[in-house]
Image (cartoon, rainbow, N blue to C red; front, side):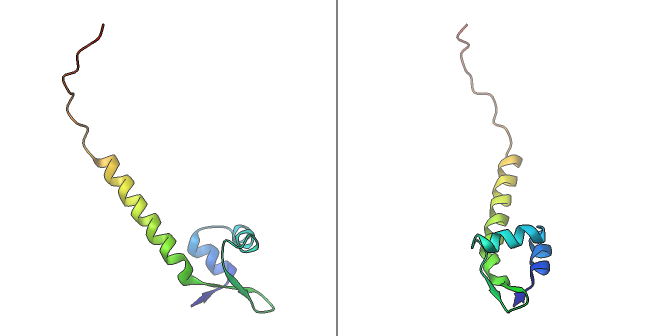
Length: 76
């Protein structure tokens, strides 16, 4: 499935200008059909899955209980 720049911007929660810059920098693959850029939606799936996994790892880390104080000798 192909998306327009506007649809891609909404899908990724970015501005259309940012999407255009990413296309020009070849960070997003796109086809130009003579009138507008068409972007293959599936190229973002891996990135979005990795971001979701990263968010989950951060959440797990933040929810991890703080361990009890180890009996540390005060050096003073």
